[in-house]
Image 1 (cartoon, rainbow, N blue to C red):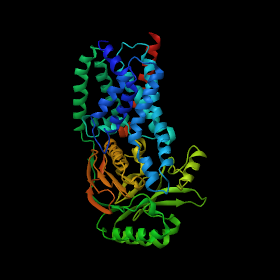
Image 2 (cartoon, helix red, strand yellow):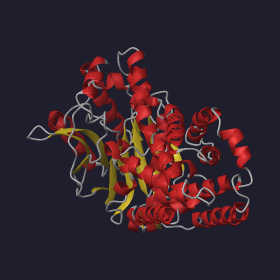
Image 3 (tube, helix red, strand yellow):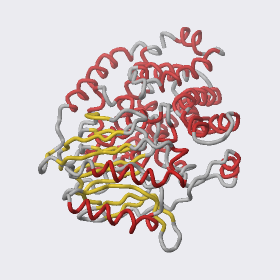
Image 4 (cartoon, rainbow, N blue to C red):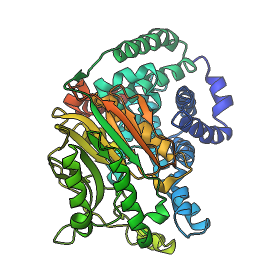
Length: 503
């Protein structure tokens, strides 16, 4: 370890905690809307060095501060959602935002503790594989399981425009993250032991070039004629959306805008574009609209809440046209569509006069909806953050549709982050994604994960374009996350076993 003295001087002082917090901020700057993708390498290399030759307890603290930097900046939009759209003062939203960010900061803290706990048995070894495997396992835990999953600010999203995006259609976001983290671990090892330099000279250009070549593979196979689509962005402020006096104007806006685009094959409205229950509008509004759609050979995809005979409430998407259908949201948003941590969460939201619906999750095995003769995968709001859900029945689907209401986060970085997440789903599945939002960012994303057209933020806008219906499967669409996560878990267990056996 030729630079141990340097490591102690730079990182094993009280300044290490300050550097950890600052590194977390750098980490977040690699994501949209900043898009400084190389900063994630700097942030993770520095963070790895901060974990060199320290105790697990101190690693826990540094991991928490690193996470606080990540989420303190990265999910600052939680504060915006409570201030812009409610009558609350700043104090309580600020406290809730701090608690929320602190909760998610626990996960980098757990990573740091586990990594150091295992690595301390053999500090002289190269721990790049351990670094990558522990991080991805914790990222998977946070992204898929805790509080119904919170896959925000995951490593792979920062690399959608880098050579490492080539790994995404093959291994998904977690597999691509493993590659990036492995490189970060190797780069950090250069500062710890001279022998790592040769390995970095081999692995860095190799993995980068392989990723670049993988990006050239065309997984898509166009099947059928182009589909003309129109995406409507109503730009109705969240605080006005459900006011009774605004409902008629909202319904009139979407009906009139739709009438301007009957030449399109498909017209898509955003999440809960209709501020009323299905049964309230099905006869007086939806039925006449569907009749016109059929006459013009156009299908309409819209969204509204649906209450069944038992009083269960669903966040729903419906198709009006030749093949009527309904999709009910499966992956509900905590603190938005249901309240965990009751009664505390409910009490705090009552203090801020925030009223949220209590929704029921839809069935997992719902059939795909169809428009213009093609099936598509539907997601509502942050369901597009879950890769496994977006590849459900993808073999039958010709494109993806996501309807979203990011009106809660006006003026924040959230709409940019959310669009970046949506791009991942298009790239993983090699399908065009049609993303319609209330206030932005409405966009069409290609099968390569590139935004080909988008609407301006916070403007009423109708986006019309043509997309190809696509078949064919990426390796990730065939196998999902489980094989790569099983491999990473077995790798981690093997490294733990090795450390204990030879200690």
